[in-house]
Image: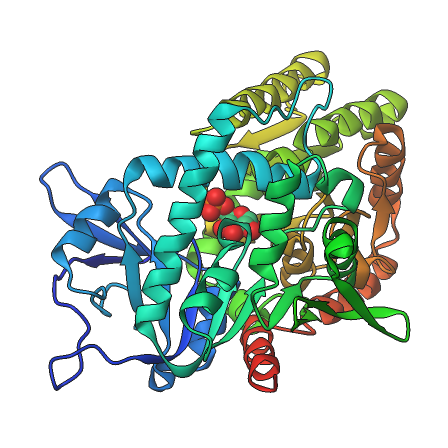
Length: 503
Ligand code: G6P
C-alpha cells in the first residue's frame, strides 16, 4: 500500500527553531516512508503500511513520538540530504521521522550480510547445515559493520530521546541497540520487540559463541524483550540460560512461565504481544471500487465456478512456497476429481532480491509452478496462477473470494495473512495453517494445522479443506476472524508502551 506525495524539503522543527526531544522513540530498519528517485532527479515519497505504522498512528501526533529508521534506497539518501534532522511530516503521514544515512557499504553488510543472511536464518532455521553456515573472516568483517549500524541507531536515539523517554526498538536488525543505548542513556526505558520467531538453543548455538553472547547481552540491555508468541519468548529465555547461564544469567519463572531474565544486576522482563489484524481498516479497504474491480477480473480469469486455493506471501524462503506447490501437485495426482475444478492462486511478491539465495528461490517457485501447469493444464484450465508483482487491492480481492487459504511456513513469527483472510473473506475460507507459524497458537483450533515439511499431509489437508461444508467453513471463519482481531495494531502498540512505562 503506497500513497504518493510530492517532495518538500523542510525539516520538522519546533516554533523556536530547535528540534524537540521526544518522549517516545520507535526504532526500526524500515521506516514508514521511502523515496523513489525519478529520472529527472525529482523524488516521490511513498508511505508503507504494516502493524507499526497503524500502531504508532494510534497515539496521535500530539504524543510527540519520533521514528528512527535507516535510509534504504538512493532516493532515501537524497531525501535525507535535503532534509534537516527530521523528514518533512507531509511525506511521512504525519510521523516525525529521523532517517539515518548509514554509509551504503555498512548498511549492505549489516542488512544483507548479517541481519538477513545470519540472524533471519538462525531464527527461521533455514540453513542446509552440511555446507552452511560458515563463519569466516568475511563474516567477521560484516559483523563489525552490523555493530557500526547498531551504534549509529543508538547514537541517534540517544540524541532524539527526552529525559526518561520510552524507546521501542524493533527486530533482529537492531539487537545490539538496547545495550548500546543503556550505556549512553541509563535514564531511558528501553523495550525490544522481535517480529520473528526465536531459535531454540541448540540451533541458536550454531552462531559463534561470542556473537551468540553479544546478541543476548544487547537485548538484555533493555527493560523488556517482547515477542509475538509465548513459544518465542520461551526460546529466548532458554537461549539466555544456555549461553549466559555459566555467567550467572537466571530465568525468572512464575507458574512455570518465563517472565524475566536477571543478568549482571539487571532485570529484563519478557513480554508477549500477539499482533492481530486491523479489522476496521481491512474491511473498509476491501470494499473500495478498485478491489471490487479486481474481484470481477479474477473471477473471469479463474472461471466462475472453480474453487480458489490461495496463498499470498513475500517470495521468502521461510514461507515454504515450493513445498506448497508440491502438495498441490500431489492433490491433483491423488484426487483427479479436483482437476479443472480448482485453481491455485499464488501471489508471491519479490523480496530481498539482493541475495542470490532469494533470487534462486524465486526462480524455483516459477519453475515448479510452470511444471505443474505443463503436466496438468488443459485448454480451458491453468492449474497454477502465479503472480510476482505486489498489488494490495488484488490481494484483498483474492482474500474475499478464496475458498481455501494455504499458509504453510517452515517457521514464522506470526503470519498476518492467516489473520487477514478470515477477516475479509466474503463467504468463509478454510485455513490450512502450519503449526510452525506463531498464528497457530491463536488460530490452531479452527484451522487445519499441518507439519510444513510433510507434503503428503499438506495435500490431505488441502483435500479436507476443499471438502469442508460451507456452513462449517463460515462458522470457523467467524471464530478465526474474532481470534485474529483480538489485539489490533493500535492496542498492540499501546500495550507495549504501557508495559514499558510500568517498569
Ligand atoms: C519481516 C521482518 C520485518 C521486515 C519484513 C520485510 O516481517 O520481521 O522487520 O520489515 O520482514 O522485510 P524487509 O527486509 O523487506 O524489510
